[in-house]
Image (cartoon, rainbow, N blue to C red; front, side, top):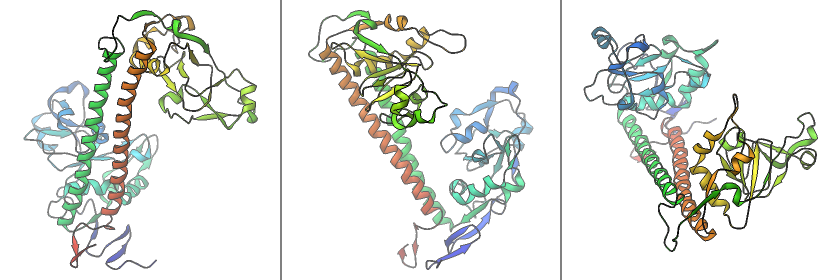
Length: 422
């Protein structure tokens, strides 16, 4: 393949001609170092301690959330960390988690040490911007090397010898800083979206607490609510079943088939498994119309979902068909708000379950259908706003990944090359 003008081929990929390649050992200011031996009994007081769990949080590491460790004066001197230090995990249950890293921010004068499950790398500031190095170690060329160089036995592990040879790209320092700043700006946007989403979720929780209990009434509604039983609004409950796993003709892509597993990965039009019409007709399962509330009476108690397509259900679930005086959406939000209460009603030594009579007997507010609909509309609008923010956040994450691939390999340049922006 012909190289684009201004680029060169290296062992780890095509990069700009004015970039160099190196490795972690060559760009380090001090030798790599494993951390101190961690003793749980010394946890809870002393200086800040960076451990494996901190590698999987958002970068940079949050000083405020670090554990405290009663390190000796000698340990503080030997294992003292500073702003810009990178830490890599030495072991992982899965290969993809090996040598996962994070970077330490300004410690504001606080002493910080790190434990023996981590390897510390400190970049030479005359060669490498620490923020760029962190991003480089997340990039494809570095991750591919780190995962392939790890040793796999009962655990996946990596040592300093392998880590030292990890390839890094070395652009001019000014470009390193520009790349790090650009990606840091995207991270700041993501953090802002995360905070806004969390705030909107808190507001929704507060709204449910007020609206679903009648403590706050929407304009145009008044009068006391009557508390009866959930069973008073239920027309019928329909259970389900599982077609024989031994008959392949019962399983296919015709009818989405819902189990408790789908509650955790809920998609309004898809399920993890599907059955055929033959499977439906030869089992205890039932076809549940779109728009029907489905809840669990065994495991995941208190959870409820509403599908936008017709589905079949298994034996752990019940479809709740309501009387004309009740709103499905209101009931959905009522379940969301009361999930913990319903879960606590469950019993069982190994798997929690709730009986049909117990489900029907749960106290439930009775209010006009018009007010149920109005409350559900308010909460649905809040959900739509949260979903829009989550979608924006996900798109921003995708943009960041694309930016990393472009900027960290030099395909897109943030500095002027030969009088123009490449």
